[in-house]
Amino acid sequence: MYRMFENCSSLKDINLSSFNTSKVTHMTCMFRGCSSLEKLDLSSFSTDNLESMNYMSCKCSSLKELNISSFKTKNFEYIISHSFDKISSACKLICNDKFLLKYFRQSTDDCLLL
Image (cartoon, rainbow, N blue to C red; front, side, top):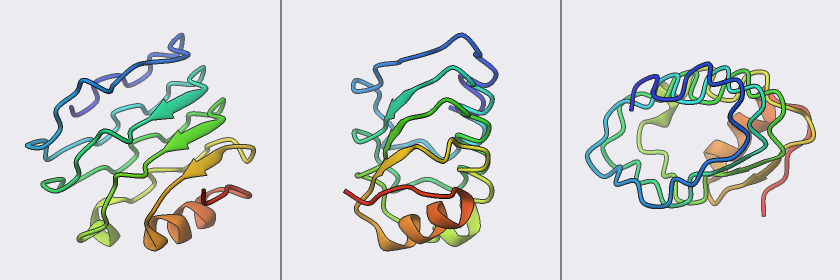
């Protein structure tokens, strides 16, 4: 899934609920530069084998909602670099992981844990 949708600047919405990510190891730059993307629901994603998601949603400047409620942070300190950089400060975060919430708040101005 490395760079799968990178720089798809016209992409506003995408349904990823049928994606099987259980064996995925790299999501680096997956949505990087998707500047029109407004909602990203990754709640169906498994992160159990994830080794890298650096810059995953970096430069998604129109993002209003990001759902990463299924993400678990086993070793995320090392694989999350710049994943949320340049996301809109009005973005609503849906998250169940305290580490991700802390990291997200460091990268953006005002997102919420729901």
